[in-house]
Length: 460
Ligand code: C2O
Ligand code: CU
Image 1 (cartoon, helix red, strand yellow):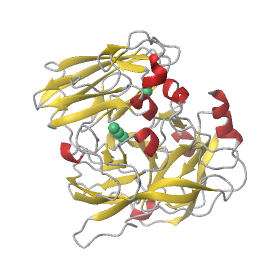
Image 2 (cartoon, helix red, strand yellow):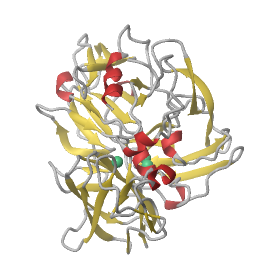
Image 3 (tube, rainbow, N blue to C red):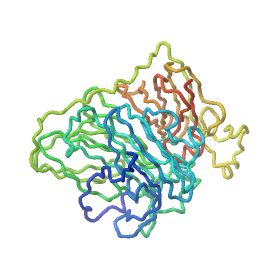
Image 4 (cartoon, helix red, strand yellow):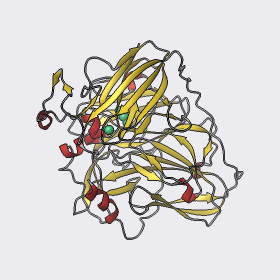
């Protein structure tokens, strides 16, 4: 896998692309107020050359249009499926009504080609979220079906011109600079780190420029839309502090000292900067041998707002009661270099060779993929602690639908909806199961989810 990592670097060179402005409400609104998102095929130059790749997009945009609402407002989207395969949309990180969660086979039927589906829900929490396909997501997200969903605070503490969204994606391009479609679904990716790419884009472009106004706080919203790549940044190199993780603000903007900050697949990090006019800076990806610049910010004339770093208002999520919480164990096994001999799939213990046929190579508590039985089932309002143990040789990014959780290990215990767990490590998360319905819990390395790391829980 290290060859692909090297080319992630090796392909980089040449000059920066032109000005990239975040798209906003570029989608047409139907007369009834619904925003129309048409999933379809379109062509984009992904790499450094003009070579066009066929991608799957919403409204032909890469990423799909930025949806921006205010906290507590309705989001109304009509999905039109112009693809020739079924699809659905999941609203990642939104504490949503279950029927709107977009998970085929659990909360809705997939939307067939040529048909439509209406999503209609309230966005209860301010913050940085995103939407993506949730039908064979390992395939559909790899091809480009995602976009940002921004929920503004009641009073946005940032000037709109100083509030930018960067959707990051890690593409696998072939030697012609074209999306490598043939390797989507490769069993090697499924059993190893997931689909890793060799080319990083920001809002569908290579190393775009952004501009900020100096002397006032600027907000940089980072969304990792990669199938499996863990990105790393070092906020200190640009004098940035962390405002929020996965949409949820920290109590105070956090200075991350002396190390880089991983951003796992599906995770979001909001940064706050306050540069002086003229103090241009570059954001770099830090996971490789050398920093990889991926976005450049030019800092223009000073703005008019007060030059203080704002603290974001809390979304007031319910605190889990750790005394009365129900504890659930979640042991992850399988994968390359892992135990494969005791994985049950569809009620039957797999033999090692079965993997080629079933593709199932990871397990939660010894079971690969979703079954009829939930991981746990609790009454609404019950606090839950999930004790997770990663008994594999790979990192995982565990995501719960419909709920945010507190990370009970590690520093500070931030709220998150997706948590990274390193090989042979464990983590505890706690949350109040207050959102009725059937909710997925899965690894957001999308190949891992498809290959077994996928279960669900029920809130009654
Ligand atoms: Cu980002 Cu199951 O989802
Ligand atoms: Cu995983």
